[in-house]
Length: 351
Ligand SMILES: [Zn+2]
Image (cartoon, rainbow, N blue to C red; front, side):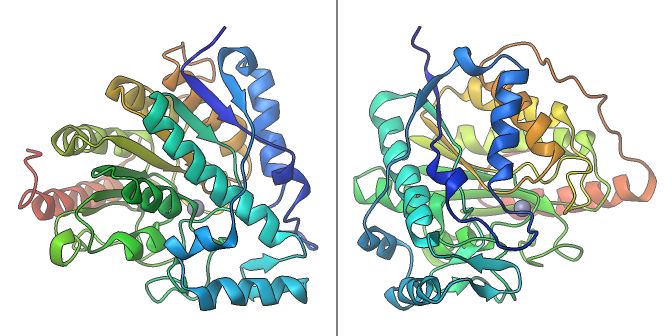
């Protein structure tokens, strides 16, 4: 049976780029996702395809040569660290070129075929800017090359003129924001935990892009302890934005680290949020490439399956109890939402 939803996975992402010390960004993340695919009976509901690598030169679409050379030099003397969060081992370059190549290749394929691709790639990418650390961040937060930015740049080079990047990882996609901040062909919508309380401490509602890109960067922020209800309130605005921009393709930086108790953040999403996101993207009915960013434990076990079930328009088999947000946290979430809306309304009619 051929479906229009394809999961791209390969052993290269499990065998390569392994930390030599306990670190949350490790190959076990993908094993969790694969187990969850079996547990929720998703294996035969999607098609499968293989990762594709790319040449080092492809990285220059997004990164300066000096940064790429630097990662190569570190890999040559591995094990090594880019910073206290981000490790490099002997085969990091190879694994990262597969991640970047897969993002590029399947974003293009999605435009050609109209299929939706879910890319199970690592190392992640959204914290890396042109020269490495982005927007003054102290680290690269486990990321080596910006896979989703590579996908978007490649599409632009091939004449695609409107691309939406939706980043729902709990951390701000500071690398992606930096790369596309002045670009009016890429609408970057980022939903993340309040930067006052979480790495990389950027991505404020008042960041709206610059120059030609003014109005094309949009940050929705959520205070710590926000649950599914906070995400739900943002969804209609995201839908309105995507409908008014009407992109040729939607790229999703999908992270599952906002899932309750996933470990690294203080958001409390459950399967309901990820299922809803999957549904929303299914209803949009656009070419789609979803690129794995964060998510370390239970978010991968449950959030991933809920997302795919939503995208396939199947019943939510994960079915967590929705999380509610109360008191001052809810008030703050509403204040933040109205800040984003008032900034965005100058450019887009979203209410
Ligand atoms: Zn994250």
